[in-house]
Amino acid sequence: MSEPFEFDGRVAVITGAASGFGRAFAQHAAALGMKLVLADVDQALLDETVAALREGGAQAIGVRTDVRDPAQVDALAKAALDAWGKVHLLFNNAGVGTGGFVWESSAKDWDWVFGVNVMGVANGVRSFTPIMLAQGERAHIVNTASVAGLLSPPAMGVYNASKHAVVSLTETLYHDLKNVSEQVSCSLLCPAFVPTGIANAERSRPGDLRNDVPLTRSQQAADLQLQRAVRSGKLTPADVAKATFDAVREGRFYILTHTQILASVKLRHEDIETLRNPTDPLSLKPEVKQAPQ
Ligand SMILES: NC(=O)c1ccc[n+]([C@@H]2O[C@H](COP(=O)([O-])OP(=O)(O)OC[C@H]3O[C@@H](n4cnc5c(N)ncnc54)[C@H](O)[C@@H]3O)[C@@H](O)[C@H]2O)c1
Image: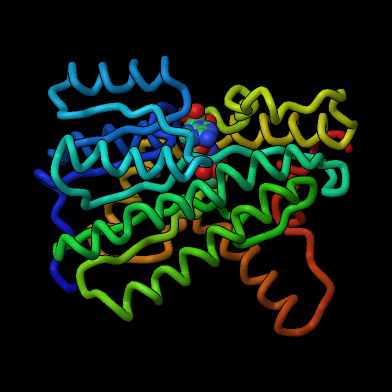
């Protein structure tokens, strides 16, 4: 697999495509001449995104998809094949989050965040990998985790646990694919804070998984901290998209858009290797830690 990945004329499927990184992946893919299948749970924003891309000359369809539901992800794969015949690039990108002390997270929080962040990725891998393997052509899967999949910052335990699962799932996927194919591979995207809709993820929480009690103090503080951190992000979604496509082109697995975070990753690894108790990863980022506790 030493030849660079070719994008022009190939087919990309993107989940969480109506906002943030997903929309930026779609714009970048369109500029590279890819045919697009955009999936999101937000029908109105999805329609708007598809219309804007088509106006710019892209070949794109939108398929409303809740990635938590295996049947809807199977239907997404079928719609992609019906529209364009093949799938070469899959972004399992849809994601949501909650904050606050881990013991204060409700069963509905766990259900929702793991449903989207973990089962969404698992459903994408299960539905699309066999299609890619059967095609006998170059194909690639990009799973969006987070630096929260490499670290365990306080007051975001449900999100951290979900993203650690995505990291492990994707590293395993890499090994499994390498055992059976020279054509199909995968990458793991681990961004830090970037201004997108992620701090307002509650907008897409389904009615049956909404909490019917007010936020606790730790949840309010975590919300504020997340809003501030996301707003302060220096990179744009377009920067993240460019870094991601560059990595796919070159066949790189780990995509870390904020390399300064590696100091915290190293600290965590040292904690484990020396059996030292965990260092708070935010101790290296005091500006993020200013929110009231
Ligand atoms: N922005 C950041 O700072 C940041 C950092 C690290 C990782 N991430 C990850 O990046 C990914 C993209 O998030 P973003 O920052 O672009 O946020 P975003 O809120 O702008 O976009 C997420 C999209 O996912 C969609 N979505 C939510 N639930 C869905 C479901 N069940 N099925 C299908 N679509 C669904 C939303 O409607 C939205 O359009 C997520 O996995 C997130 O965890 C974001």
